[in-house]
Image 1 (cartoon, rainbow, N blue to C red):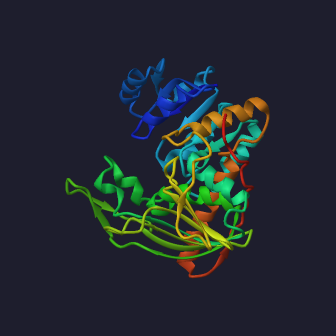
Image 2 (cartoon, helix red, strand yellow):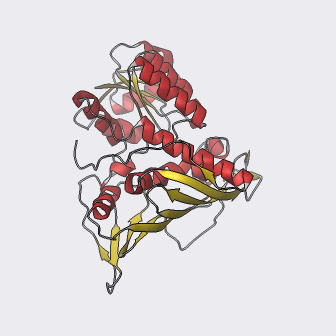
Image 3 (cartoon, rainbow, N blue to C red):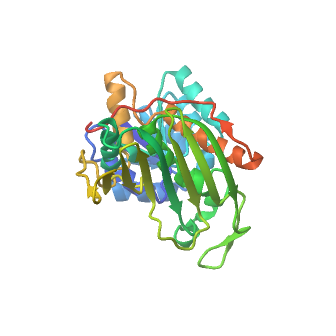
Length: 353
């Protein structure tokens, strides 16, 4: 399928690399608000055409738009692509609000095109190995779990970090999709949440000394109640200078524990320990997708469109994750436990295109 990429910023490089090497996708055009940047990126990655977003959307050879713009533009660009009759695959999060995400999905359904969304890291070898272990009963019945994403913030390394501290950013909306998408894939939909949240600092300072105002929570503690009965404690923070707790997911079952490394990555390691085991053992990864394979969700979506089946990195899954995140923020603001209004099915296990 012929792909048009909108947004030629930092994350785009890995998409261009992978989409031009996966067996069923080819990038034929790219666009950016900075047309010169689009042209430079096109030359770097061998993309035949570059220019404005309007030119890309008017190009009948583009069948699917990969939307790599900043979060505030995800729905605007997505709706424009849908109205141009093109499938759309968005970087995470799907939208800034559940209402906007629902609008995008509804318009796509009316137009007869599909919506997909990052993250696709849950298709990687790490999460899929844990999925296989859970389905095989390796830890018995999943009862509870814990996830941690603790960092001092992105202003220390990102060249344009402002949007991380605006609506659609913060540690929950920025990094939460990796963890929550993995958890829904592993445990099923989230039924209810409770949370507390806050901001450690009113402004952030870049290495050059520029101050960035903070308008979103930068430390979030949440409890996730899954429809299947498990509960997971989740901490997402840009306020932690250093920690001994690694980024990752731990799931505790009736007969054992499984540990997954950072779900922002595609690989492992995956550690397993039974209740009566003397120590941990590292599980061999079950699929080959352990390198940085961003764009794999696009290729899987294309394969699903071709065969007429549901795609795994779907708009429905991304909407549920968005709804969970929005509900976490509201629960923290109100100091109450809230049900999550949406649901989603566990995507089918994934091994190969």
